[in-house]
Image 1: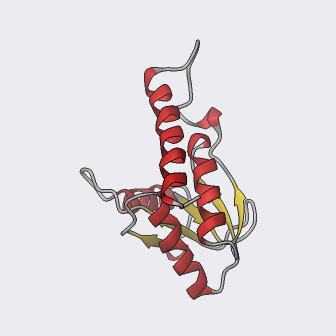
Image 2 (image 1 turned 60 degrees about the vertical axis):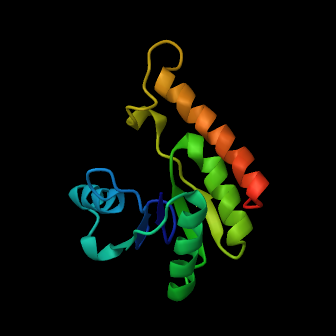
Length: 140
């Protein structure tokens, strides 16, 4: 999950939040990708402890409060956006969240010719289960 600290297309800073590590640390890989695409490394803040969306929000909220930032562009997948926005609204109601999902046309995950792929169906199911779990935990 990446959060921007200003308005659409004009973010001054990017917060990259993920504690996930497979072969490489996900947050660092997202930062490196952003730098390759022209974002100055000095404008990217890393949050590397979050293990799930709720922790992404809590840890990013703390960074936002430290910086005095009250508005973000929230960048995530279209499937994940609802849960991420609702979690921000619950855990950080003072932050104005502007959803900015990645473009389906720019993502290989969403590209398909006829019908949804098994991977896409899994992604949708994951999000519905995540919504149910977050509601049960009181995070939404």
